[in-house]
Every structure is written in C-alpha cells, then in structure tokens.
Image (cartoon, rainbow, N blue to C red):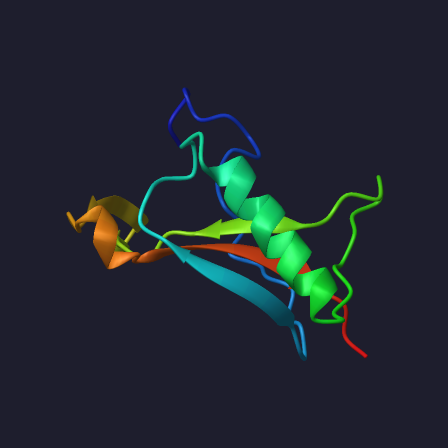
Length: 105
C-alpha cells in the first residue's frame, strides 16, 4: 500500500533445497574485500587439487568460491529482516572462512 514500494523489490522467502553439498573451507580472520583473499583462494584451490578433489565450476568454467562471515547475526522483526549485528572479533580468531564448492562423486 506504500506508493514508493517497487514491485519485485521484496524477498520471496523461497529457497532451493540441496540434498547434499560438499565444500572446502579455510579459516580467515579478515573481511571479504581484503587484498589477501586472492592469495587465500589460490592456496585453497591448490590444496583441493593436490588432495584429489574436483572444484565445482560455474557456467563460465570458473571455480565457485564463497566467503562465510561467522560474526554477523541477522535480527528479524515481525515484518522480516530488521538489521544485522556485527560482533567484533580479533583477526587472529579466524572466525570467517573462505570456501570453495566441490563436485559430488
């Protein structure tokens, strides 16, 4: 009923259920935009290949990396997402993770 609302701009609360998923992760205490992320992805990719695993590739043939942020908590209200709360954690805690999707056998 709000005239400023844009149709299609609200979440649909739908998801795709995956029976099984295999990932490789490496602990990292920094943030997704840190310059070190590129080197960490390379190390993770090399380790996965050396251990005999096969990375899952996207439609362009690139490995599917992700960043898992473990220090963010989502807070919900009756209307939906209210805000995100970030906990401060020292870098040495390694609370975040860089991940790589792997192929299932």
